[in-house]
Length: 126
Image 1 (cartoon, helix red, strand yellow):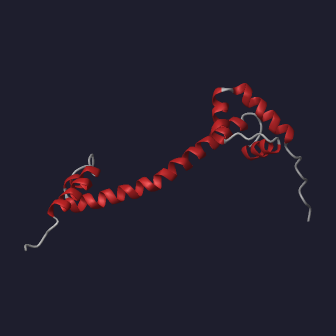
Image 2 (tube, rainbow, N blue to C red; image 1 turned 180 degrees about the horizontal axis):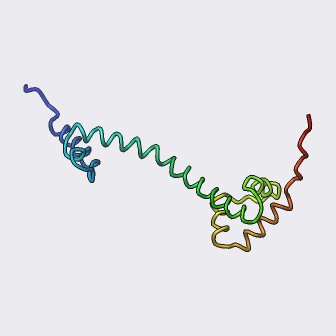
């Protein structure tokens, strides 16, 4: 009985890899060894960057809130502390959207946060 080889399965597996490399440039699309490396690396970057995108959006929202709050005479950290003390549970995405699209409402939020801020303790003398 002749030795069975997995020629069809190997070809099908390679076709899957080459389809995953569609759109890559030069040898990263046409040469088997480079295709494998490129597709694996692309998968690693994709996994890492799914987390990174979320992180970058959150930092963008914080920047927007900080700019809006500073123009109203308060710092970001004091604003967030005031909102927490006032039991206002809005996430940073919504706060940044309100700051951009609805200035009067954001002004009211800033005033609420200022009103509920605890008084600063005097600096301790040593």
